[in-house]
Image 1 (cartoon, protein in one colour):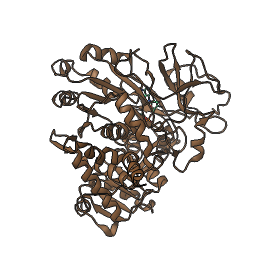
Image 2 (tube, helix red, strand yellow):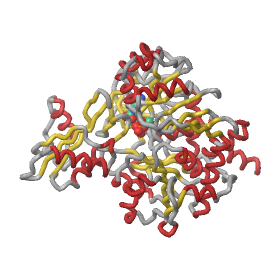
Image 3 (cartoon, protein in one colour):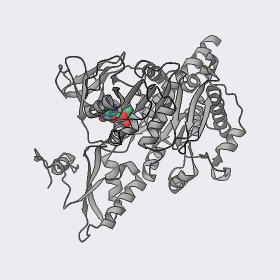
Image 4 (cartoon, protein in one colour):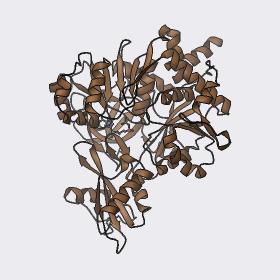
Length: 543
Ligand code: 6R9
C-alpha cells in the first residue's frame, strides 16, 4: 500500500514529476531554468531550487487555508515566481489557472468570476486592474504580490514574506490521473470564454510529446517562447521539458530580432519552440543578423499556434539552413496531436502526421468519415492522455464537442494520400491573431459599452504578419461623427477591457451591421464585404 501511494505520488503529480522526482533522479544540481531578464541579467535555478521554491509556495498556500480543488491563478508576465507558483499550486493539488498579463479588466472578471477563483498571484503593476473588479469577486480571498508588501486585512499578501516563513519541504499527497490540474480559458465565437480544465494525467501526453516530437534529450538547452497564459507555455514551457529533466531558458524581454538571435547563439539553444508570427517577424529583419550568428548548436525549430506558411520554411532553409517543424494542437487537446518532427519528410504548408497514439479523422457534417483529399471537420478519436476533462461550469458545451467517439476540434482540414494533414481553417468565427484566439463576441461586447456606438460586428481578416487581424465594423448612433479621437477611444477601451491583443487593427464605420432573422451578426457577410467578395446567400439577412 505504501509502495502504491509512493508510485502515485511520483508519477501522478505534475509538479512532483517536474521537481522532486528530478532531484531523486540525481539532477538536483542541474540547471532547470536559466532566467534571463529583459536587460540580459541571468540567474540560474537548479532543480533543487525549483523544488524548494515550489515547496515553499505550496506550504504558503496551505498556511493561508487554500485547499485541494480550489482555484488559484497566476497573472504575471514571465518571471521566476510564475514558475515557482505554478508548480507550488499543483503540488498542493490546487487547480492552477494562468492568465495573460495583457488581459483587461473585463477579461479578468469573466475568468476569475466564472471559475470562482480563491486567489491570484500577481505583481504591483497589474494589481490595480484586479482592485477595480474586486468588488464583483466575492470568492477572491487572496491576492499575492510578488513585488509588494502584504496587507492581510485586505486579503493582500507579500510573496516574499509568505514564502520566507514557509518550510522548504512539502509532502505532496498522492495524486491520481483525474485530479484536476491546469485551467486555461479559451475563446468561442459566441458567449463567454470557456474554462478548459486539465488533469494531472495530462503529464503523460506532455512528457511523451516533448520527448518524441520536440525530440528533447538530457543535454538539451531548450527555449519555448510561449507565454504561460497559453497552453503552449504550460504544456511545453513547464511540464513537458521539466518532467524530462531538461534545462530551459526563460526570457523576460519582448520580441527583438537581434536579442532573440543573440540569445539562441549565446545560450547554445539546441531546441527552440516558437510561433509563426514571431518567425515571420524574424523573416522581415536584416538577414545578416542570422548569417553572422553562430547557430550551429540549434538542432531543431518547432512552431505552433497558427498556420506555418511555406515561405517561412523556405526562408529558414535558406537563411538558417534548417527546417521548421510545424505542430498542431489546442488548449483542449493539452498536447501536440499532429506534427512534423525531425527525421520526417516535410511538405511545406502541411502540419504533418498524427503524434504517436493519436487517431485523427476528417469528418463530414453528417458524421461520415471522409476520404483522403476531402475537406471536412478535423476530429480526434477520444482517449488520448492529455485530453481536457471538461469546460468548467459548462458541461453542455463540453458534451457538444463529442460525437460518435470523436472530439470535434472546430478546425477544418484534409488529409493527403501520404497521410499528411493540411489545415484549411476554422469552422467558427474565432479570430487567430498572432496565435492568440480572440472571440469576436468579447470585442463586440466591449465596443457596445462605448456611448457613441449603436452596434458592431468584428471579424478576422487575412494579415501577412499576424495571420489574421482584428477588424471592427462600427455603426455609430445618429448624429455621431467618426473622428480620429473616437477611433483612439475605441482602441483604448478594447485594450483596457479585453486585451491589447484584441485591439482592432482596423475600424470601419458603417451604416448598419448585417444580422440574420434571429438577430445574429452575419460575420460571413462582413468578411465578404471586407474582401470585396460575393456575399453569397443572404436570404436570412435582416438588412
Ligand atoms: C496550441 C494552441 C488552437 C487553434 C487550433 C487552430 C490554431 C494551432 C496550428 C493552428 C494551423 C497549426 N492552430 N496550431 N492552425 N496550424 N500548426 O494554439 O492552442 O490557443 O487553443 O488554439 O489554433 O485553429 O484549433 P489554442
